[in-house]
Structure formats: C-alpha cells, structure tokens
Image (cartoon, rainbow, N blue to C red; front, top):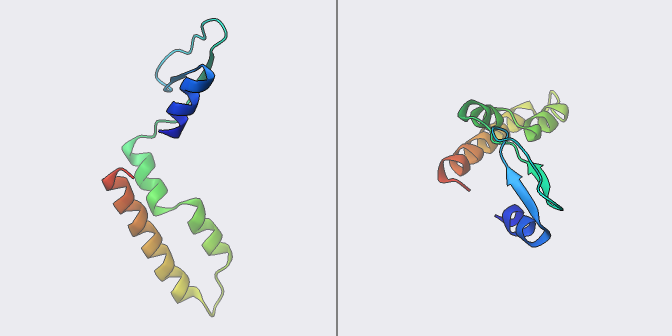
Amino acid sequence: MILLAGSALHGYSISTRHEVCRPAGRNTALVIWCPSEFELTLLCIYSPAHAILWMGTTSVNWMTTIIVMVVLSSQASVNLKLGL
C-alpha cells in the first residue's frame, strides 16, 4: 500500500512481472515480484530468518531453535492466510 501511494506521488508506473513495462514520458516503470502460491509457502517454511537461526544452532540450544522455527513458520503461514 505504501509502495502504491509513494509511486503515485513520484510519478512511477507499477507493473507486475507478467506485464510489459513501457514508461511514458518522465514516468519510470517499477517491476514488483508477484510470487506464486508455491513460492509463498516455501518462504513460510524456510525463510531467511530460518537460515539465521540455523547458523546460531549449537548442540546446547538445538531444541529451542527448532521450537522457534516452528513458531516462526506458523506465524508466517497465519499472516499469509490473513493477507497481512
């Protein structure tokens, strides 16, 4: 929403990856990522936050790390379903 408001103020035209970008005059085309359902699900299951958690996993805290990863995936899935 902020992207759309900011682009309207600055004269940008926004298109998805499926459309052809043809800037008219001083307008600049801004291509945004429109992920498929599979890509969104994959991002919920294994996000960059999961990779950071794996880097900090040791033999002492592995159980806590896995619990945090499950909570993180659940929260991302709920946010995806609610459209947040």
